Image 1 (cartoon, rainbow, N blue to C red):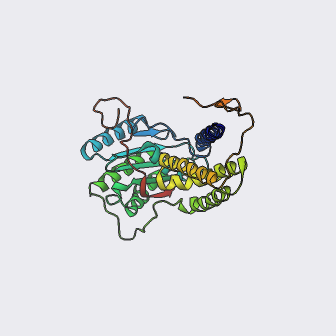
Image 2 (image 1 turned 90 degrees about the vertical axis):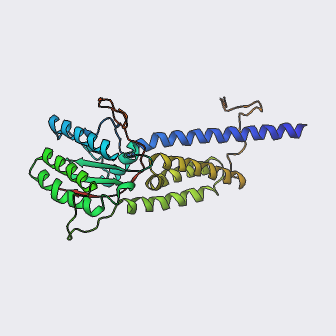
Image 3 (image 1 turned 180 degrees about the vertical axis):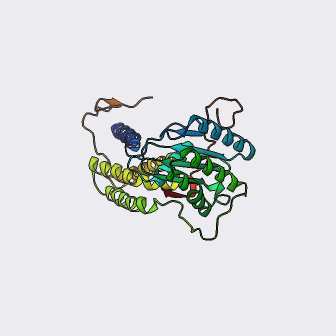
Length: 309
């Protein structure tokens, strides 16, 4: 009987230790991701001019054209201008925004993001996986080179954005073809940045398996935070975080199997209480005329092209 009580107490302590660390890790992720990532704004309309480079008349006309285009084709196009890239690359910010906004229908992944950063003089067309055939990297590069850049260089931001959006819609309809001298561009240019950090994070996580007690848990958390950008790059923002949490659970299980858990707890009285803490029990398809608008659940971007002026 005494052995059964001790076993029960040990199991209860293990569960509480695991719950405490799990909550701690999840809280750290929720706190650190916004700190190190771009502050993605809430998607409210098709044209979000946060940099203030477009006239109200242009915004209104673009909104109308994009709404009609979406009704005809189901493809979602969003335009976003940012006052600052927050020291991130235009490619990285575009992917973060695209993933968060979930542009395009979930079953078709047919979204497109045109992002412009006037302070850094950067721009990018991010294309959803479902439209990679209709709007290739070469065609996106040509639109930037022939439609956006010339107008931006002359200071005509309204004309450049309008021409760029019109060219994107025409390309998807098959009315805009690239010239033969255009060169292929890469889709996700941030791979060279996130892969090395992912390797370092993987090493930290592996080493944490063999570090006893709470120090090993700290190493695990650090490793997963470092590897998180790679998981986000592969799976998207939300699923990347879920993958990190699943990895954390697996590592904690393996640590326990290797005998490197948190160890016995001071302050545990066998009654379920430990250390002062106890366990306890217009949407895009809308037909109304409001400005409210959101993504349709599409996947992350598959390609596109970047440029400057």
